[in-house]
Length: 162
Image (cartoon, rainbow, N blue to C red; front, side, top):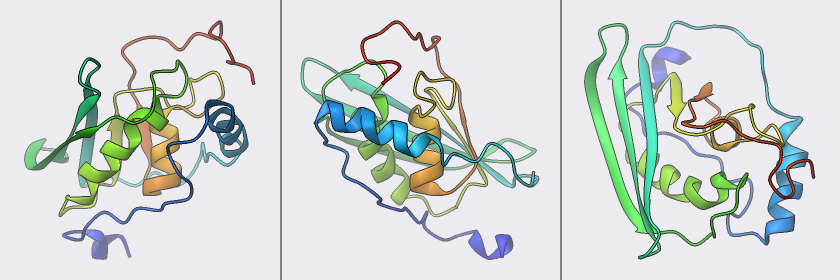
C-alpha cells in the first residue's frame, strides 16, 4: 500500500476542534497522550517533510512552511507555505492548538505524502506527553513524526501535570 501513497494529497484526520478553552485543551492532551504509538515497523522513508511555523504576535498572524525532501539524496521535492490568522493564545504546553491549524492547511497543499515528518516543536518530551509533533503526527497525519524543539519542555509551567 505504501507505494500507492505517492503523488496524492496528504489525508488529514480532523478529530477535534483546535480553538478550545484552555482547560479543555489540557484535558484533551491528557486523554490523547495515552494513544501515542512509540513503537512500530521502521520503514525506510522515501519522502521526509520538515515543518515550522513563524508567528507575528503583534498582528495575530502566522506562516507555516512545509518542505518535502527525497531521501536519501535530500533533494527538494516540494514546498508549501500558508499564511493565516492565529486564533489561540500563546499558552506554554499548548502550542499545537495555536499552530497546528496552519500546519494542517500547509500540508493539505502537498502533492507528495511524506513517510516521516519532522516538526519544530515537542513530541513526547512534553509535560503531558503530547507536544505539537506527537499531536499532529498521530492524530492528524497518521504518519511517524519526530519533534525537534529549539528549547526543552519544562514541567514547571502552570498546568504542566494536569
